[in-house]
Length: 619
Image (cartoon, rainbow, N blue to C red; front, side, top):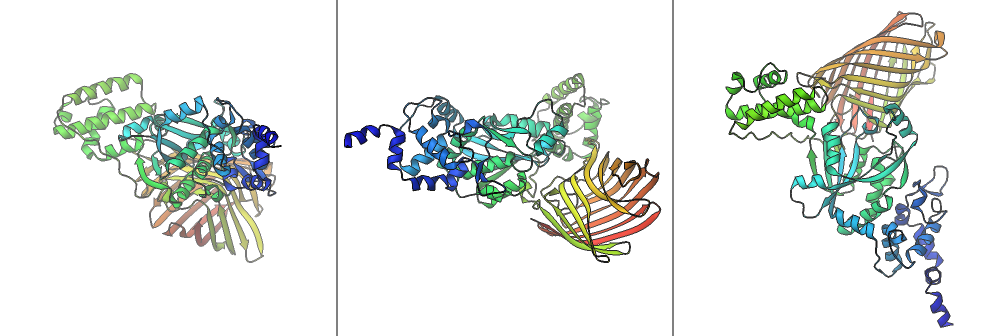
């Protein structure tokens, strides 16, 4: 009998079933570590496990996507098969292999995995850094910001060496010809596969810092060597595998949280994700879990150029503009009369500004080349150093701003009717929220719901449902001239000529300019257009060009906006609609603000005043 058992144990699957109790297999299959490695999550309407991986190549069992126990048994059998090579299960799934061998005390037999071994050797990773790229309103894929991991190589002393480091990122594999609108639609409803990719850091800097002008925050994680090994082993398992991409939850930030959960079991960062995973929120969770050893700020090209210009005197700035606009060459007498060091700084700043303008496609290539050559030639004649001024690190990081989920509680009066109001906004930030940690003049709101209970007739009404609302009030000056713009879509209460207020789907937009001091007092003016579509409106639709004029102050303690909106409805009973408003918020701390709003509306020759006060709470 003993010789027979010895022969049978030469077959791994037989040995496994003979030596591993079924209860132990059940225990491992339901352990948090195994479920995390396979990306299992409870389904919405039951307690059954379902892997978020949407690629058959990620599983070894035909039932692997829905059966953790079947996948564990298939993996155990596969990793005990003899042989080696890139197609062996141990080479395809090194993180699973390492974990199972530790749990079951399987012998750590060496195996030849040429592709995996070469990849790990080339990465030469000593530390891992979580990088956050600031929000970018001009692209639906980056409106909330973006996160990725940088794999810092061993023996890196110079910051320049990190440019050659590799990065791990997860993003939607979108069709090249898809428009931004199509990207937003398919991204929200899971129309794209999500792919984990490895690219050099300098490519990320070129995209985010140099092209999209987004500041970068670098959070070096305090992972141990063993934790880094687990993370990279699992990253190899994910490479090229399809996980359907969803803009709000299963996005770039979500997948990185999963990698960190694998690296350090017990962090359970994914458990914090509810309806959405905002990148800045996920960074905040990583910091809260004491996973960060140090933080570094890398300003974008636009931030650096603007700081260099602001460091010049007003007369020196005039020289820069005169040279850029072609009226004065670098050899002009008034430029050469500057002290050597000041002249060097003016020429350096002018050169940097020229390169920045060229990247923005505002100049012809010939103009850039001619002026750049003249600037460099004149600069080479100055034997004086002009240290480049470094853009200061912001006082508040993006992860230190207010939480993005907001609830508003309050009440007020509309005409002669009193009401209580509840507002719920899952994401993300508006112009009067606490500004610290957010882009000045930027607003992005999703799925905001405003409901009122009118106390007189005991009536509950949905006042407005905002599907999406984006506003960018970027300040214009002599050197930078961005457009201000806004867009919104949803449903809102609107007046009809017979005095009824109906809930009407709407689409609105506008474009214009903003002037002043970002984050302080600025004025804006926009030409707008509104479209309403509803059977309760005569002819079923209405269109209105208009204007939106206002003042905005975003302060650490108090934020204020006041303005005038006017529209001329063209189709439904041609008439004007005018509204004057003022809103102020006192920020008591990062998570609590007091709100007061007053507005006066003239619509269908009916004048009505509405005011309300309340609390804004951030979670």
